[in-house]
Amino acid sequence: MPDSLERRPSPSRRMSIARFSVHALAFVALWAILAGGRGWSVGAPFVVLAAVTSCLVAPMSRWSLVGLARFLPYFVWSSLRGGIDVAIRVLHPQLLIEPALVRYELRLDDTAARVMMADTVTLLPGTLSADLDDHVLVVHVLNTGAPFTKALEALEQRIADLFGLDNQVAIS
Image 1 (tube, rainbow, N blue to C red):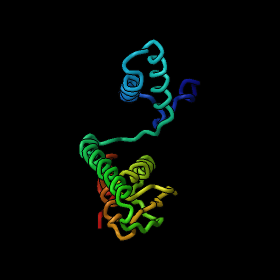
Image 2 (cartoon, rainbow, N blue to C red):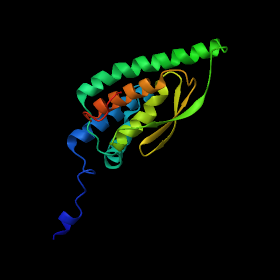
Image 3 (cartoon, rainbow, N blue to C red):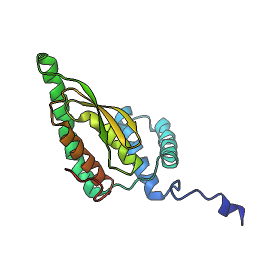
Image 4 (cartoon, rainbow, N blue to C red):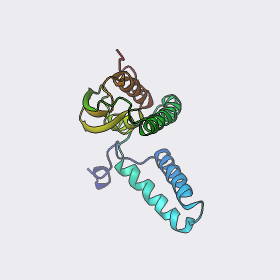
């Protein structure tokens, strides 16, 4: 077998032009925000390096554009609600707080989707992701009487939709 065939990267590690373009655009936007649109002589090489590295290191995940369109407004609204909830608790410390660590069994089979779930749980009011171990997410909740399970199920469904994982999450 020729050397060129033996050294071919696995399909999950291949860098397509489309994938590189998406990563590069994300890093261009990040540099433009952080540097105020200046310093491209320094930023351009780092944008290319970051895009190549992220394409080679990051796992391949297929996102659904429809799922993304549904997730973004939910993400913004939940972030606002979470911030308001924290502000109210700070201003009114006599509000009921019954903190606890709860285990939530994830039904998502995709590793990237489970990590995204753990990362975004924190924006739900009164919740904080504490640990992720395979299919079990440990969540710190401020009030065990709050309907946090339904909120976690709704978030998990949105994450499944975002990753195009149809019929993976059945909300009870």
